[in-house]
Length: 323
Image 1 (cartoon, rainbow, N blue to C red):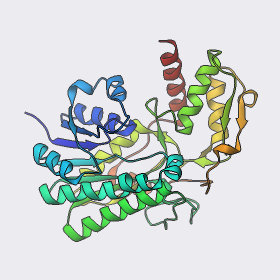
Image 2: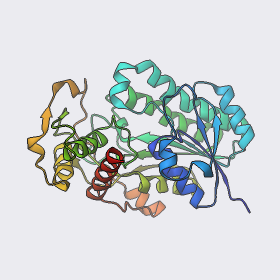
Image 3: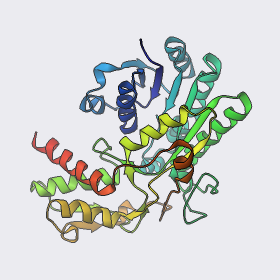
């Protein structure tokens, strides 16, 4: 007997691919939507060997009618909104697109759920970037928000829209305020993958230096494969709510570089060059999550250390470059 039906926006992204595999392994029938205007490929789903186990549908967060049609076709019982323009640096050069996709796009998904199947359980991918200029040393669900980029502002609109639909229309709508989470499937534009790809290239003598911005920026980094389980856990709760998902530990970009270069027997100081062109207009210096609520209510704990994740990423990049 077929299990629940889940619909994932952003299924071709890092989190979407890991979530699709997680749900398939749980016995779900999984549908994922793809915007055909996107340059995204299916390589992540292929790499996790899940592409032929899910249904791919055309829809776009810019087009409410397409979202309504997909909801009507699937009658999905769980909807995970992971789609976004999610690269912070790009949000400065394309702020209006970021707002349309990341902010208003989430509202369109909520509307489609409300119109077609208001009993469906809805998950919104919120982000630690909403905290931005931090108001408390460790951020939890009650910490005031102060976003410092068009991306963070857009995500905050989506986050509050989720709360509004929960309170106004009694939707089972939850947000996961996820702190940074990485994997071998991370996009090359993100700093962790930029580092591990460069380490792999330097190890293979294909380049010699890595140019980065603020090496002292500190983040709470976890493993994407662990974090998608928390998403699923939220939608199994009797009542919807918002949860910070994090490791509770911070590490600097500099330290992350050291770990990656040490893994291939090199000193990061010999290869990393600070380039002011990579600094953000408004920098977020430190983000540290307090996942106590998720631990207490969901029973969720991060399982994978950043050191392990970095090694997985370096190995994957070496494999890709030599295959």
